[in-house]
Image 1 (cartoon, one colour):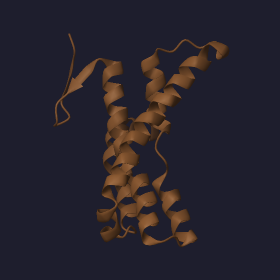
Image 2: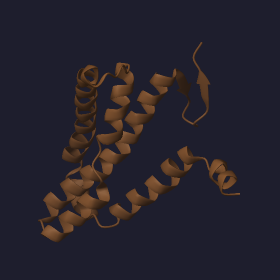
Image 3: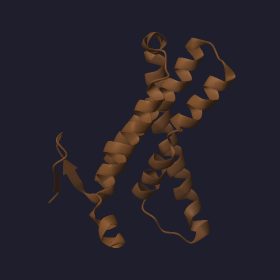
Length: 147
């Protein structure tokens, strides 16, 4: 009974469409929108470049260290791991920012970057996972394997 219930759940959709969306929504409720609008350029730069750079650095570090651990992973899987751990936890960041009582501009930059880098990290992860699996997908989530 329990095994059937667990196997019936589509964890990809549950995590990406439900849980992550709810966490990001809950975090976004506490960000001052006027400050977010004024700081969008800095936030976008930090979230996109930060996640890409972190993904590449972590992937390269894992790839370089793996022979010491007797592992043989393709570089794309090392990048995939980097994409998983690159984003910060928006709920934890928002809690810390609120406790510190920082000015609105700094609070918006930190909290906004934390939320947006989570969203961008999902895009990076799905892109790298698609490359690793050799699959393509359209904007509606339908996927086809490459020949």
